[in-house]
Image (cartoon, rainbow, N blue to C red; front, top):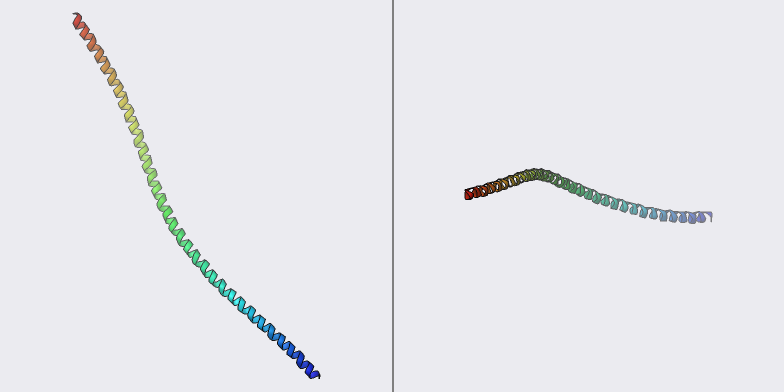
Amino acid sequence: QQARMDATRLERESSSLAEQAKEERAHAQMLASKSELSKREMAKVYEQLEESLKSQGALQGQLETMEGQVAQMTACVSRLEDTNARLHHDLNACRQERVEGIGAYNELQRKEAEASRVLTSV
């Protein structure tokens, strides 16, 4: 009878251990699946990072090109400002010459009128 009780107890323990082993196997499989999923997710993240780095490199190249264009445009604007200042100076000089020319013309007209009066009165 003791042997039967021991056998029954051992059977229960064996069954319990088998159930625990089954649960442990299931848990280990779940962890392996999660690990595999994590590996796949990390691979995706790595690919995205590589793509981001490529995009960043391309954008950096575009930025450098644009900076070069801005430098060229800035130099062009500077030359245009210099030309504009020179043209304004030339325009002011022409206006001054015109004013002086009008003054000289008016003086000549006045002298001609005076000479005409003198000749008419003689």
